[in-house]
Image (cartoon, rainbow, N blue to C red; front, side, top):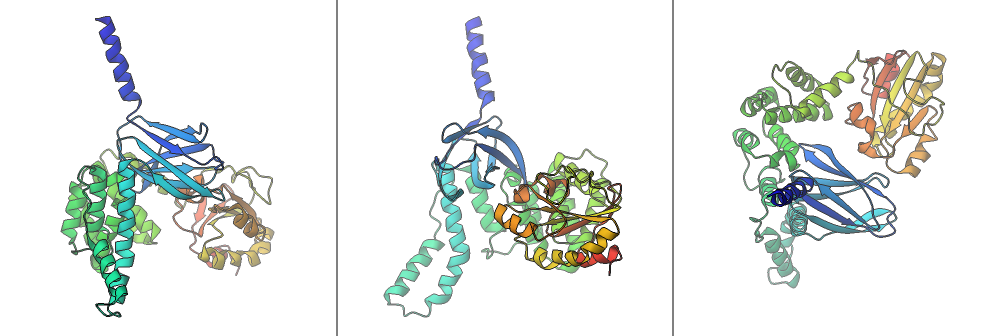
Length: 426
């Protein structure tokens, strides 16, 4: 009897310890040693596991059931791979060129199918309309016209059986219906709200939630946008986890598109909830509260700063500090940020300092640009994976904060000209 119980215990431990495994093979020339595995909730990547390379292979054990989108992120190379899970083992290998991933081979059935379907979907969405436009320029019996017709028929056909793959079926079916640029049928607000309310948990893990919400917002008359949003939130019920995730997504959409009045309206509604708030909405509320005017900016420890001996934002001593979030690849930054250079000497005379945190990923591009900027510069070279992007709720570049001597946020100007005006430097 004891032996039987021991065997049962071993089986239970093994079952709990690993739901499925992800096996990743890299070329010997690929230098990164560490990989992060992210799951998905709405539009947010959630860190699930970290693993160190053994030889040319990473093997990641996923301990909890998960069906949905996954991402492998290699922080040392700032590069990533998208994949999916059907709660089954995943296998892939990739090629590289100059340290960047160039071709991914998905070796398990689910990912190979998903990759093929996404490739076909992109061609259907972007190439098929062009083929329809040009085919009439060729006579029906010409060799090229017949080749065009064959390709049109191939891209238009849906012959793959995906019923054995629940997540692939969920994603592919609902992308075509709710997100595709030219859907077969235009849906009403009621139909989209019903989908958002009644879909299973794969909605949160599919990457479809935010695109569907944007489709919902674009489907109506902008004059009635508040009424449309209120109607949706009533259907999904913001006292439920699904409703709160949708409310969080909407707040972040309005923030990203500069719709401040709508963002503040629904952020206030979120703050006034009397029920238990899920983790997603709680983070949205906290991040916005921590970066609103009047809040003390949470400290940030510099990585490899230039033009300073200070180790963090709080260690920089100044009567006022201007925090700039930028990137060398941002055209708006290229046009806006240099306006501060001509005012920098005047700022320094008033004991005002600029601290620029870059969301660059390319060291050479960052270094070339940063050396032309006379103020404090720093970067993690992790793009939107930079720790300060989420910490300070940065949704676009450039973004500006003005702090007082005690690191309290006293202004959040939209442009460099607004910074200059606020500081009376005109």
